Length: 84
Image (spheres, rainbow, N blue to C red):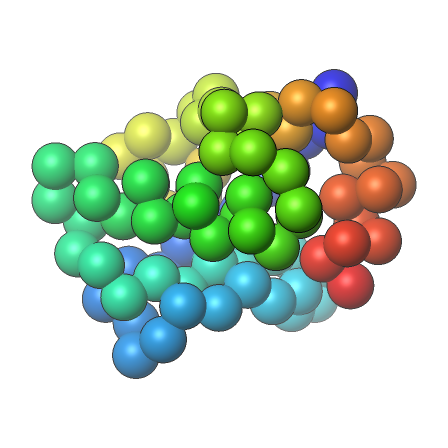
């Protein structure tokens, strides 16, 4: 099981996942109300990593911009390779 530390920017102009200075930045267009931004982050990461949404779990940072996510079925090396 791999771990992924991300920084989320809600209300962005587009949905995007990018590596910037060894930090994974996730931009989502949804607002951070009622968990909608978290759901959008999980959906976007699942699509980018090529795995099911159920394999991603927010471990820390449910209400924060910085989140720690468990990725089931992929190692840290595989995650880094898929995110570029």
